[in-house]
Length: 132
Image (cartoon, rainbow, N blue to C red; front, side, top):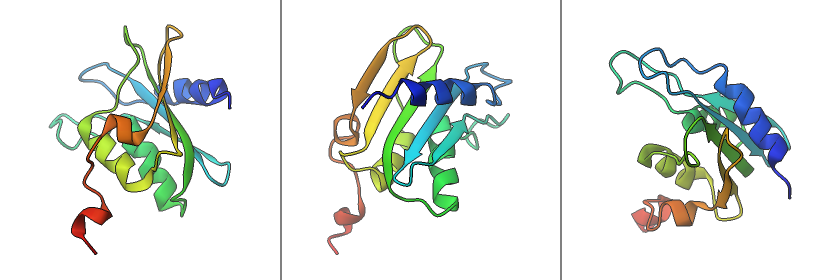
């Protein structure tokens, strides 16, 4: 499947980023199983720890609207190489994504990589980790 259109949505989400401290804007576009697209951007805070990344914003928005099954997510930033999710975002993705969810990492220079959650976070702590 061609995901260029999903990357384009993520680029538009970058415009909404609130990044007055780092000026590092990130956008994400999450494609739900329903076909609906949820946009996310990073939202900074002067204290930094309350900052929320674009990927988590998109996932939390989707979940708050009742969608918990996903097809793909595109993450984009103006970086030299493709952007990669931070550890916290990877853990949140592991909660909701299986390896059928395509994770598209991109930058504004046309570089694109596709990956999966098990490649980004091998040995993730999941609900199965509880042994229930």
